[in-house]
Length: 114
Image (cartoon, rainbow, N blue to C red; front, top):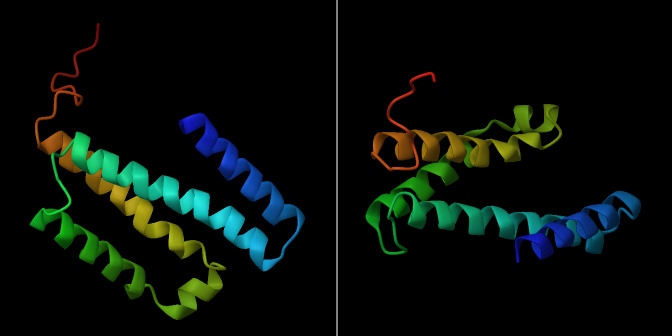
């Protein structure tokens, strides 16, 4: 499944960077957005135990949306729209810190050198 998703992302990106038309934009954006959403939901459920009806999850998503809208227009224009990558980057940092703090067994507690 993951290999097919990566293939869809590659095909969409190739189409967009070859033919810059509106349909190619969607072929580029939708597979990436779908993967990001699926990856986020998987992490929330698997590593943090948050289901779809969880209050903490809804609060986190509202804050992420607020960060997206808090970016000033001049910065969005100066960076040519790359500030749109800020929420996923912040989400990865938050998920990593949250997973470490939650005592998840996937995060090693002792960092001893062998």
